[in-house]
Every structure is written in C-alpha cells, then in structure tokens.
Image (cartoon, helix red, strand yellow):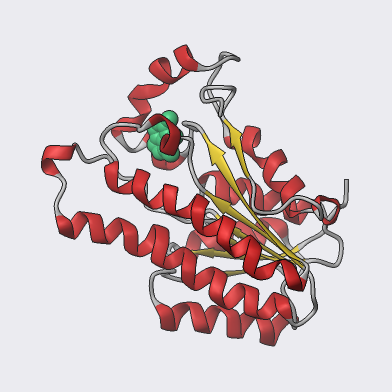
Length: 246
Ligand code: 4PL
C-alpha cells in the first residue's frame, strides 16, 4: 500500500521502538517523514533509512521553544502537515514508595506537557489546509492500573481524555484525533527496564498468546493516520492481543 504518497508526517519518539516502526512504515508508504526524538542521532538514522526528503530533528518535546522551532522547520521545509503521530514518552519503572514529586513532574512534563505542545503547534499547521490525522500513544496500562508507574498511568489516562477533547476542537477543520493503547511491547526501552520481566504475566492475560512487537502496533496507527479513517475521531483503540477488553 502507498497510503501516504504526498503526505508530510511528524512522528515523535522516532529513534527507537514503536515510534521508529511507525515512521519507517509511513515512509515506506510514501510519506515525507520528520522523525523527531530527544536522541537527534537516532532520529537522523530513522530519516536516512526512509530517504527522500525525510529529515531527523532533535527535540525535547517538553521544551516550548524547541517545539516551536521544530514546527517552524516543518512549515519552512515542507509547507504543510498532514499526519502527526505522538509516540515520544518516558516509560518509568518506579515503585510507589519511591515515587517523588520530582519524578512525577519529570514524566508529566514529557508525556502530557510535551503532547500538548506538539498538538498545539501541529494542529495549528494542519488547520491551514483543512486536513489532518493525529494519533497519540496512550497505553493499556490505564485500564489495567499497571504497577510501578502510577505517574505514567496518570499521564497516559490524560493522553486518552485530552485526545477526545482535541477531536471535538479540531473536527470543524476536518482533523481527526485518536489514541492508541498498546500493551507491553518488546522495544529497546522495555528491554533496558524492569518491564522486560513482565512479559510472562502480561501474556497470561492476553486472548492471543505471544510477545507484542512494534510491528504488531504499526498497522493500527497507519490506519488511523490514513485518509480513509476520516469517519473515526475521538476514539481509543487497544492493541494488546486482547489483554484488556473495554
Ligand atoms: C501492560 O505502557 O501497558 C508494562 C510499560 N505493562 O509501559 C506500558 C503494560 C508497560 C503496559 C506498559
């Protein structure tokens, strides 16, 4: 399929994991991708694998000035924005007894403040051509109440409800906004955290057994980001092998 021919997409968290997998798929299907990550080198590697006019940009999405510069680059370089996928997030593992306000703020700053800044600037650019697809990464942990990440769960609950409200605000401009709720996925981030030891437990709860990989999440994101998903907005889609049903 070549669903993104002529489209310009910004994908955050594009240096690794699900963000990278989504960026590569959008690129394979014809999009010009602005691969965004705090890891500038990783973002550039993703962009180079896509080729064409795709670029990598280093950006701390929690920094208002950095996000403003990012979208100046998008507007200046490509003149429009069709697709915005927000996959960038901090995925912490901190048991409740060890959770501090500083750690809470660190995670909320990126996972929620950063999402706000990206959607604020991204939707302002989309509005100009009355078209847009926004896909925000929530998590199925918001339904499960997954342990050792209360601040993350709070932030991802916010992603889902913010995305609903965003859908209402942006509907008049023919921009859709949906969230995706993956389960535990085998990514570089998970492999370098204690979450890597949760696969067996998570698998026990899944309707379909096996270990979730980024490629299992990509098709749902690409669909919601595609032109033909025009009648779907304000929704949340679990992609977790049936671990949670709601
Ligand atoms: C079920 O989003 O949804 C671990 C780590 N387990 O980040 C998550 C589950 C994790 C999750 C998540």
